[in-house]
Length: 296
Image (cartoon, rainbow, N blue to C red; front, side, top):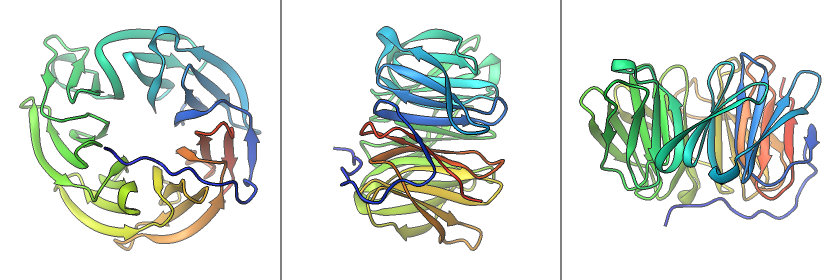
């Protein structure tokens, strides 16, 4: 069984601003539109962020609930859901593309022959969309999360606890590395560094995409789960679901160095960062709301 977040007791009062929201599963911040997207089981909530969090739209997922993941696309969002991917503009207009399976992750990707999106499915397939001759890449048990840096593509498989190179030129999987006892999430920064969260063994593990290799292993007590990277401050932010906290780590020395630690809403299963002012956004999986945390 894949690792899962902890159920944390109520601890310190969350810092910053908290607005009410249903239990959520994913969060993303779009720097171009200055919009935050929070995915709940049945809808995607959109928030303006300048001057404080304010909900501006709600996009129902309808028959495509539950939502699984969301990424920013530069002016909008791409949501992975059951049987579909949904492209949402910053003002809430939605366009649905059906897929053959339960989409767990979807990312923009500028591939050959017009391919513009990669979709990871619960049965382990990775599908190309938008191309003249789109392909399906098989071999994983679960395509849990896809990471893209330029032409490099990596796939997280939570069920196998692995990180795998995806060779989109050849249309097949490449090298794979074991990630502790239970990788749950991972993020790739603008330098091609991957921070993978091993919730099952209370640690984060660093990799580089090219060359593909492990760089560090660092203990993070408290069931770490979600991760995002602030390129301006050079901090990787990791939530700890066992303690209701989010921790900022500098990576410049080659090994994580803790710089900040903040109290969050209960069960902080998703995190996103505004690199312009360093605000860290956290989404509660327990119905504790959406939180905006100032860090600079």
